[in-house]
Every structure is written in structure tokens, then in C-alpha cells.
Length: 176
Image (cartoon, one colour):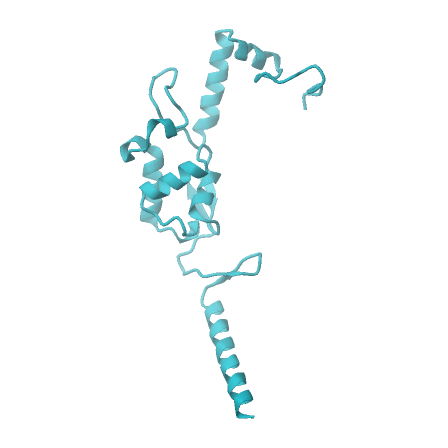
């Protein structure tokens, strides 16, 4: 009888601890697991005019920003000395500033040229990383340049047919 009472007492004590922890600021995720978070946790961050989910891992959350993939995001976190196992909502303002600085000036942080997504720009001849809203503008400028010089790719864009060598005899008969 004494063993049963002590087990029940220890179970109730453990349950009180769990309920106390849950009421002090942990969020229950959609899959039922709890995510420990403090008062400074942000569910949505605004980085480079893009909404970033706070619940996701930093590396994967950064991929929501246009022009930043998984490998570049991982490299950014390492160069900015941010823990890659953190959630995006747990980042401090200083860490976010470091990440933005690395994204905007990748060459200053010794990121190699071959890692950048805009290599040898046609107008400037420089290597850079294009991100967020600049991606659409640079793509539009490139297509307009190809149309203007009457390049094969530009003409295919102009005619609204497949550009990259796909078969067109039996597929792609409806445009949309």
C-alpha cells in the first residue's frame, strides 16, 4: 500500500511540474510536441521584406527569402556565427543583423565566387548574390536584353514557346 501511494504522489508531482512548465510559455506545435520558448520568441520575423516562420529551424526558415537556398542559408548561419539548431523565432536582434549583413555583402565574409547566384553580371561584370525582390527584376532585365538582341532564347520567350530544348510536337499545346 505504501509503494502505491508513493508512486501516485510522485506521478502527481511530475504532472504538476509538467503543467507548470506548459503554463510558463511553451507552445504546443501542430504535431503535439511542445516547443520551449521564452517571452522574446517571435512567431513571424520580417527579414529583407519577407515573412519568415519562427517555428522552423533557422536554416530552413531562411529559404523563404527569394534567392537563398538551403546550402547558402547554412553557409550564412555559419558565417554569422548563429547556431544552426536554433529556431528562427529564438534569434536575437543582433543575430538577425549579422545574418542580413552576410546576405547583403557575401564577399566581405569570404564566401567564394562560385557560391553566388549572379556571376559576372552582364552590365557591371561583378559577382553578387541577388535576393528578395531583386531576383524578379534581374530575370526580367535578362529576358528583355535577350529579346532586344534577338538571341535564340529571347525569340523563344517572345513567341511564348519552350525555351530550354523541350519537345513541343505533342506536349505544351495549351499555354495555361
